[in-house]
Length: 369
Length: 198
Image 1 (cartoon, chains in turn green, orange):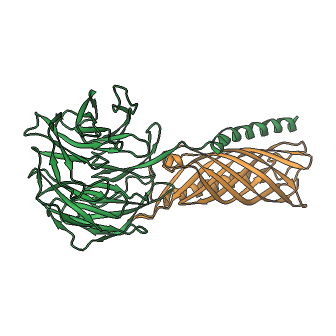
Image 2 (image 1 turned 90 degrees about the vertical axis):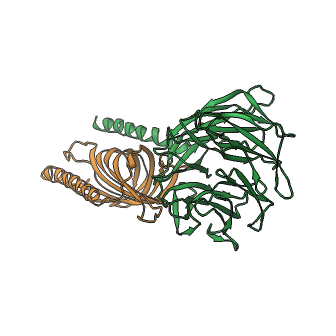
Image 3 (image 1 turned 90 degrees about the horizontal axis):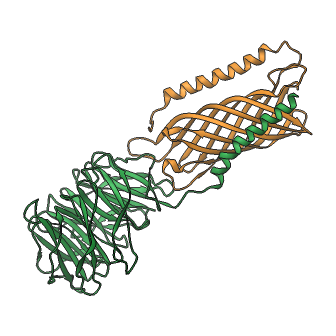
């Protein structure tokens, strides 16, 4: 009798152990990758993102401590390193990325920059990193050690530029670097030779209060979004052709595509077919198609999609294919899928997939594997 | 919540486990005047843990290796009539890339002898400590103490007069370290040293 009871109890235990255990043992996680978001009062918030649903899981140890006022973040193409501009410390932090967990370990010492480094930009091969120093009106240039990620300032750096370099971007081929000066309403082009910057002619005048710009993947065209003379008027987009040899800009006729108020961020989809502008005043995203030959913009049938409150940056997630918009008012990131059905009227239209809270106003975002 | 200093809580856990062991021994001692002499088993061996690390932000599950020890009294009611109920105190430590997981468990166990083999199943309760050793500038890593519940069983075969081989022991272990639910699977094997009468 006791023996039978014992056997019954034993069977129950083994069944209870086996059911959840086997489920855990034989199942595998869905495809995922990591995302890093700068949140100035906390450091770097790190998330494991499900590739399909966009759902985030906070990575153990997040947020990771940085220097003061981390503003811009760049993950190296090898996905082994990450760089953050510490605006208030005049430094760049280098972090090693743990491949299995996505956790970050800072490598000391921090690399000095000019005054108030704001935006970081890296060439697509990960050989060089550039920092725009708002306070000292210079661009710092660094060579990246492929093995350790350590930055070494390139001779001749920092390079003087116009006052208040608000934004910089390395062109897709890595041949040119462009500097946007919102105050003087100028774009300065530089050629890049072994990481060294050389100014190309005179800066190009752009529209009123230009806050963001983007180069499309073939490097034939550049787009600049101008906020306009005040906060209640709609902004517009200026369009330029790029001289493939010198990198010089030429304003194209037909520029002036309208966007919402206070447009502050712009993104060209890697396909080169679509352009998006985040309007922080109207808290939405303007959507356009790009003519591959002329570069002319055409508003999509659905001209705008809603975003969080006060969107300030847009990034493309190369792994999930989502367009991510960071909003400082609502302190969140909204992930959008991109309708890429060619020939369909709403091709290129964004559709919100998921939104997650960052606890603090996010300022930039970059992705690991 | 991530807990970075665990000294006090570890002491509490150690005190709890010690207390439970004492309770087990007390139970045994209280019945020592009865008919069958006390029988105890000390198990020690290798332990593999399929650790549920994705809730901590890992890309996939982690494979941890380590050791497992336990002290059990297979039959706490030592009357002449066979009774399957016993108690077990179990401890394991498993290590992997950046992760260390300790489990301290105690609970009831049922044991059945059949054709030279001994089958057992148990439900255990206790604490777990997890340490994530990604080095940071100002502190050495992240640790958390949490609840632990295990359900499992196994089979062992007598080898020598006082030694048995635990062929396999499988436990599903639920942990809630870092305030996150984790579902882990632990598989152990090793030797069992037997003391006292049977």
